[in-house]
Image 1 (cartoon, rainbow, N blue to C red):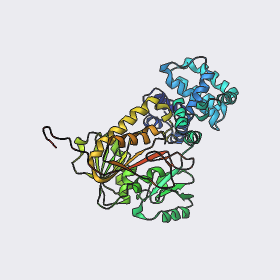
Image 2 (cartoon, rainbow, N blue to C red):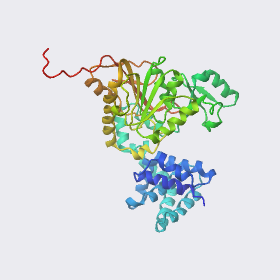
Image 3 (cartoon, helix red, strand yellow):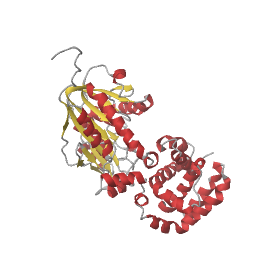
Image 4 (cartoon, rainbow, N blue to C red):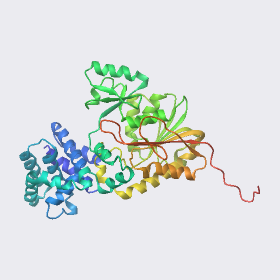
Length: 445
């Protein structure tokens, strides 16, 4: 028996609210339980509610006499999904309320039906007015958790509201044209002939943005590996690395493999070692390489544990796509608003520094390391690079010229753009000397 899409979305979102999962991990199992025709609605309810949750949660606080208990995150999620339907969709109010309240029985919490019905009916009557009151609160107005709203305002005083607006928008579908199979202009002409409206991305030489998202498997040449899905900002890595034939390249923290594949498309003679923490994370990397008929050495390991996976032969290029808060890609993963906390940022910055310190000795003198994150927070970006340069005598920063992003004390920050690229950061370092060896005891000199 199929599951109501509201119930499926609530179960997935409830796991997120409880801190047990992300939507990416919780939603697929729920989608398998709904009718095929309802999967789009289920995704819209889960992702849309997560996108506006900071605002909806504040509204729910005004509507409820007391908050839900810790064990009622599924019920809380169901209420938020009901509010989302009333305020952000065209679903008729009677259907939104009736169908949502009807799901309470399936949660085995029938005693809450009256409460949920009363709260949603009040929201139908007073929701717009209550939201207008909340507009004075910047966390509610921007639909960002307060810690993040304050951090963005502090770091980007002139841009923070635009960043929040971009984070709340729906991302465009951006493709990367495979250079090995023809030019971007030729592929744009092919799309036009097929009646698909698209344009060249302004900053990536391989990027194409579709006017309207579609099922990518229906695009010309997708199955044959002529195009892949990748945001424009992420596409900049390959050219920033200034690749040359036959280089040894390390792609650290490589999953899901988009950049790994792009490196090999740009220079097929590379010898690429791609490392990520868990074997499960390499499944997608293998799938992407196979579709594009590319080859790389894949290693499941902690990139910091260099002794476990490095053969001692130095790399001429390193791409460190460091684990981060992902605050630059919230529009693609809106549950980041629910899962990230302020305390995470300093912990991530420490991890990023450890990765830089561990990988730097594997880089050849004269080699280049490109540091990348999909974070919009300088704590994980320019500050990490500044601290690394201060403690690493043989490291120097290379300038990143270009029309994209905002130049930082170290590196260049791209801020998320409505109908444009994601939020991203790059810093480019060159190794001018190996680390000095410790002097042997008893040597005079």
